[in-house]
Image (tube, rainbow, N blue to C red):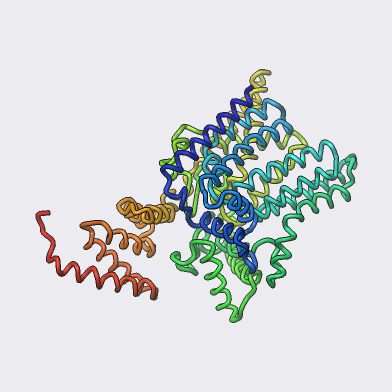
Length: 545
């Protein structure tokens, strides 16, 4: 009965979010940046035009999305509804996992947390790999727990299969595959009591992991390079550990922020720079290796600064702020009736999870797959950088460990274990300020969010709203040339704003000349010629208007 109510609440919130964003969110039918790339890739797959070159981005999610496109065509409402249904299934999986590991009450608490977790409600319906990576890792943990209890080799294989599927969505969970393989061997060496010998369990697990990965590796080999899944690793490692690294996504100063802020541009400009430095054409793995080398050179030159950066990345991973590079949770609340409700956010989920991880670790070896997969998320966040939609697949598992904290707190209260309650309360309230630290200016990372939102309003003909977003983007990043360019285009179409458009085009022209951007120079001169001729025919502006 209680589980039914929780699942009904989860379904209602996800349906409410779907319906309200379909009506209000300008990105709903016109995705931008990564979601737009994944959607275009999925349509190419359905059309029989799958990429023949080495994968730069991980292809697991585009192939999943291609299945939805094959079913629903261009109907983005149906595609997002399917994502919402998968997210709802994730709530049920959270219940099953917590029930299996801890008990029925913890299962209900975990499902309740997942049902009302606002970032899950939002990101489950975004066209991003997190939509499948979270459920896949939950299933992997479920089968691995069952394998530990039943000692069946095929359960180890299924656990590996779902972790492998999570890895082809984003390769950061390759670390989880390695951690679990080491755990299987360590468990047998330590106890030698497992019914399945590690030389049965371990190959079964590795085979399961390999099944979704090997076809991608063979594709890359056939395309001319030895790349396991995708060739973006070195680029991301340099972003997260180079001289400009902050722990968030940033465009390194090696490149213009106008030309390297989405994955397609990264693939081109990063390869061009590496080949220029090396003086020869490079394979994708060699380009990736070039940026690994650059990052390690910087680390060796400044080990103390890098150690501080690692600490900052650790704090960023558990931070309540949902950092994004293109659009984010906070700025999207105005388009969702569901997100306007007082739902649970990471501001409280993270503190409960940190306390719960301690309790989970005390319960012995059976909860280890959860900790190992969470460790893989944390290690990849520290090794590279943190973005909200990179962290989202860890949230369902964090709901499980948060439920452990609540479960243990209730048990201690019933048993009047005051010492345990004092420790629990102290740890929780110590974690809250750490999680809610203001580590950087949240507005500083919003310029691209505002820019992309302005683009969507402009495409829909809402020019005044678009101009407001471009101005907001420029207030945060005054040097961002595409925002100046698009603001000028908007102002041209708003009656009475012709002279403001001229001023903007002059800014674009000056910036284009200083940066040697021929495209912007030519465009600004062309628009200025037309606008200035029109303005001269109108005469000087009246002062009494």
